[in-house]
Amino acid sequence: MSEPSGPWRPEEEPALPARSVVASTLLGVRPPRLPTAILVRSCGLFGIRPGTARVAISRMAAAGELVADDDGYALGPDLRARQARQDLSRQGTTTAWDPDRDGWHQLVVTGEARAAADRTALRRAARALRLAELREGVWLRPANLDLTDQPDALAVAEAQCLRLRAHPDGDGAALAGRLWDLAGWARRARRLVAALDASRPALEGHDLDALPHGFVLSAASLRHLQSDPLLPAALLPSGWPGPDLRRTWEGWNRAFLGVWADWYRAEQADSA
Image (cartoon, rainbow, N blue to C red; front, side, top):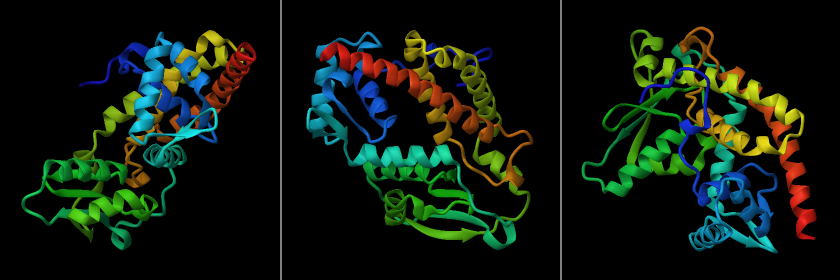
């Protein structure tokens, strides 16, 4: 689907069910644990009824996504791993890259018959490692990222693939353009930057009514950063907005967390 034109709108994003609100709320706080009442009231910001929120929390706990913690819940192992990936995406750290010396990471599937669950797991792992699929069973990316920073994803990939270091002939930027929709990513990033800038004054004014909009915008920005291929500068189009989106979101998030802290204190006072 093509990127919409005009200013970013919350309606463009997927509807937030109770599970997503609970997960996103915990993913955004450090340490990632909150009282049950606060998680339920966070869902209330989006019109989700308390009973629905509590059912979602119970199901997440039963599935291991949440762990009971005193009077509330903390993230389970899988969501903690997601939080770690989110933090890496926010940092956008890469290593120096020389195409002749470093080449490209390559994964090649070695098995012939694979279960659907294995194929799905490999695709999820490859996305976490920021590799793109050249064709069925062949994944590539420039070797400017340390794949061992994602040990769980790398283990899944290496269980099904041979890991190689490739040195493609020809224009590396053209190959990157085949593997990733860089123009589409850049368009959406610029729209998100504009939306973050436009909404920041309300947050800096501690407007509690700005929380639901900000919650959706923050989730959209973080999802987009997780899809940034983090390519070397030599392979990117000029004016690549990845660093700008990171800088803008970090400043915006400080203002957002200030408003969220105001809301949290007010909710605690109401429940005292």
